[in-house]
Length: 183
Image 1 (cartoon, helix red, strand yellow):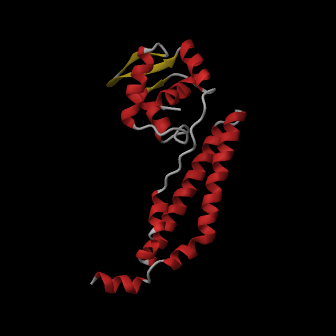
Image 2: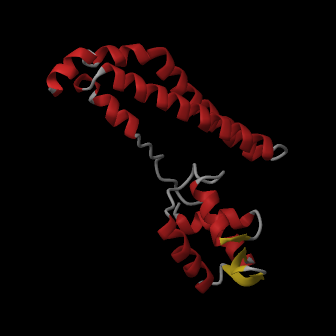
Image 3: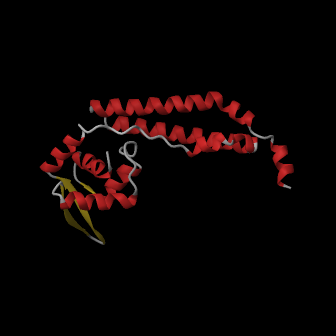
């Protein structure tokens, strides 16, 4: 799937501005599916509109710039539905934390501990966000299944990190050794 398909998926749920689409795809409930940068969403919307898959209208706002509101067309819905039959790419998982952890032996233990604690806090925040999305989408069985799946995947990662954090900290250099090496 690509950014254009992601835009169609978001618009399948109702009209949205470009800003709302960007926010939903980078921070909201659609952030978990396809990597979509700020610079890729607006060109995708322009192509979708040129292809007749979405329409847009400009809404004037008092005291603020006008906003462009996008809506999916019947052809856009059909195209989106057809795209769901396409072969799926493998899931992509990338983690800066895991790159950091790979080199824990070269780092001070206090830094490794701090990064683990930051990662645990980040995972807790992500789990909370998924719970919020799940609560907002109550009554939508597909959404409930997806959020449950995502929640459980993150929870396993969080629980593993919490129960094995000392192993990673033990790989690190004692803080005193790094103080001497830095001098």
